[in-house]
Image (tube, rainbow, N blue to C red; front, side, top):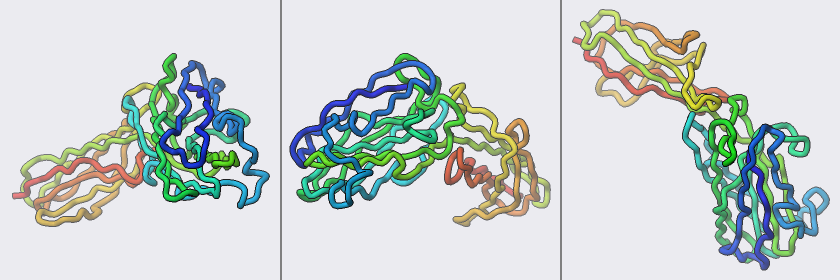
Length: 294
């Protein structure tokens, strides 16, 4: 897991080009090693207000929080995924610093089992003297932890819903901090394959359609069988631009898919999976396999 030291943000409202993100430090260990910064640690302990106890007029206002453009964060088995997070912050005294992260667990005070901190690339654009649009990136690395902090997604059970934490430090050092601002999905990538045979085939004969369904295993760094999953077998007639459902298929206990259909027209076959809460949302689609019917 990773811990993060903090430095004081720049002074002066909307001195945005000089904003500095805290440097990351790596530690090894299990979930007990996650050291997520508090509001005071992130903002240097200088804030004179806490969002829980101030009025809406005193605390900075946060809006338009976006994670990965609103799409689920889908991570494969061995390659890190870097995505953009952003927000709009406003306060009469301007904006000094902002913070966005993703964390997994029930209570950040009681301990986390997953944390995706921001990278050191915060940038903000002043909309006015009081408002700024800010963005940064987060990198999610699959695999086990090591001394370099690799392995934010160290177990498959982390796939699913994560909390989004948001913080803003205003020019007068008033502060907004919300560990439960919203939720977002972090998911395992899935891959579908298909093969229709024989090719070519005589009209009216039975076409055999097979495939495999696998998904990223963050614990092993490979793709593992994705079993007992229902999906659609779809067909697009030659000359058409749209696929239509033919029937429902299912992966077996080995992740294999096997079905058949009568060959009538030239066209392209594919498997279509509509997605799951932990895996590849909103959908996974196999490559198309074109079959010539004679």
